[in-house]
Length: 238
Image (cartoon, rainbow, N blue to C red; front, side):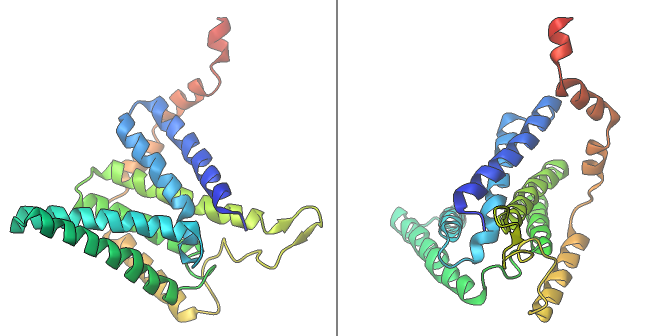
């Protein structure tokens, strides 16, 4: 299994390639491209959130605790006009609840290399991001889909790296962990797997239309531009 640094490096490399391609199209501002890059890196460590001792679970729940606390403070200030001390206590309380309460519950309910390490889970997480971005944060549809796609790409990159590290090239053999990362579910947990597929199906149903994303990636002018910029050496010598 690849370590934390390898997953970070792999996600950064794959996300960087995607960001470079999008940058050439000049469709999105730098701030949006930066957000996509960060989402790709986050996706690259998400599968290890089910590991009780991993850096990923501490990093993710720390970030989630801070973010939830921040939005709790905004809500309390806007709707209830609370004092500074009350807002600080809300932020600290929510952070502790998420970082230690929710994180402990999550690690208790999950096992490493379980359903979290599966393709449908990656799809469900990507779709959840698209839905939240579009319907709650009111992000434009195309941007919401690209955000979810980068999150999914990072997630799949993690699974692929784990599978590659399950192959012992020196001994020309497969390790026992081979096939446990890039999976479609778990035969040991058929009910949970079925529930995951049902949730994923519901997310697909409620997701915003993907037409704008399909039109963007199928645009002939986009293809011509990427091909032209792929190897521009001929322009240097003309």
